[in-house]
Image (cartoon, rainbow, N blue to C red; front, side, top):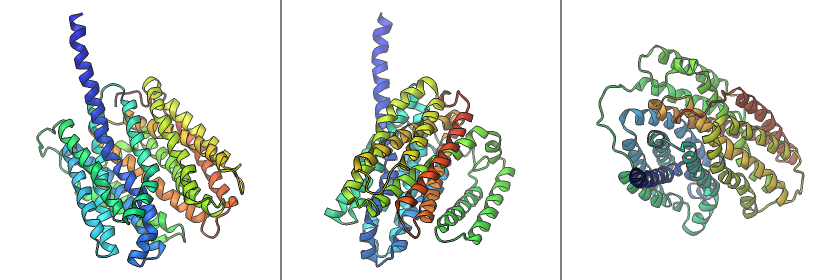
Length: 459
């Protein structure tokens, strides 16, 4: 009885510490999706401010994704080596610098440069934060990841609405100033909650040439994918293939590589997690960016109604995420992935039933099915990732995981660019849906193939 009384305060303390750890990481990791989505509603105002074409203005989005795709695994690797708390705070400082200076940009080039700094800083927060979550939380890890998923999903969903409100009252610089409350809260909590890093020892050298080769090869592939909207750029394609091969064979010979390509080739389960996450995000972002365009051009919804209808995708994902977390803690990630794949296929099939002048309530119901799928897929993919990853490689693995997301985003942009290039109609919208059904079937096959104990190993 005495032992029970003594352990109760310890249990409460552990739960409180876990709660504040998750909140601290959540406040930081939400900055990347928030800033990547808020900028979309500022493009027209920035066109006026700097005298840009729409294509020029979209470089603010493309360069952010490019810097994030490269920055996530690089900063993840650095956090594994130099300390996760240390890198997390550095990431917050980079976001602070960019958010302070961006409103004073003398020209568009400087604004892009500050956005790149912002992307690198926010890219540091996810892998270092996930590394600490995995190390510090020993029970209910999937539920903790579910809460983090709510932070990121909510910030991405409400980003355009928040951005529109800020621009209406404070013009485009306000979308940078809104970062400060989140930065300050996360910074103060990080100093108090995060465990101190062990003294840094130069026991592991950083493969800077590997980092460079990885960065330029990713840049080549993303530029090639972006070019598909107009034509197949054989120069970008050839250069990307050459750089990728150089990176692979260089890393294969290294004793301490930036990315262990030999281990990736052997760990087929981990490699397929990355492939599956790319495919999931191709479908998700095709819906996230394609549906609003369709609703406004074909269904003639105003921006307010479009925003409300689109909340079905993120809203149902937020509701499902904690429920999925409990399910994954009990049964592993595979059953949740199967549920996510099947609801994804169902949702994209239902998109084929949307016709000209369909009621907004019906479109909301269709998108809610896709939101449920998103709630299952995001969380289950994260737990599957960590079940096939060594604890000491969490940062690098998390970085590559997010790079997979950005690759999926660029693929979706290419798909929408090709389908909607000359006309936006219900028939073209259905082509996007058919592509989603095909990709969804591939995701289902990968989910069936995944080992049944995927996601059950300690994170």
